[in-house]
Length: 202
Image (cartoon, rainbow, N blue to C red; front, side):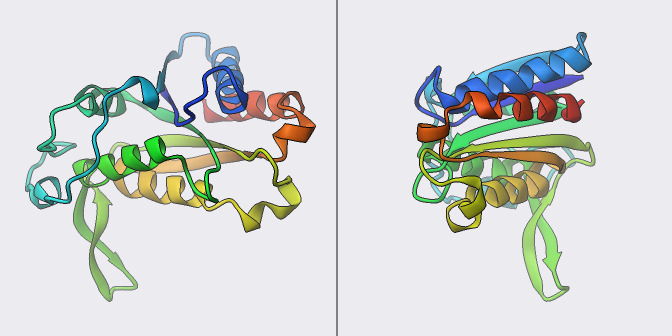
């Protein structure tokens, strides 16, 4: 099994990074032979989507279309292709994912999806995975100040990640961790939940 962990936080060694590491520990505990790759999006040169729609309009039997932008997403796309499961970690910024994570999600959408999906049989041209390969997904979202009981007021990140990856990489969410109010509660109170989430992924 091949697991890819994607960290959208610009701060290494802080709450999001630590919780993703703990989830990876859970993965390795449950399946010692599992191959895990962890990437920090801020380590890569990832340009903004140009909305040229070449990837969307590409007709191919391959599991992905080719983006017109040549940057480090070429390498990350290969990691995604090989993955059987994903761990996505991001802090909440303005109730949403971070800018690096948002850019990443925009760049993968039409590369891995084709415009053949429908909503309620009325809205056509929605993203649908190009590949039938199924993947598992675990999501970790961190808020510095908003406690879990008020999660619905600030966490638009979890559902956005879930929807984009489901529609592009054919993922099924096995669980999500919202680590709230870490500035006061600390990250340690969420480590066990992250470990269990990692075990659940495999």
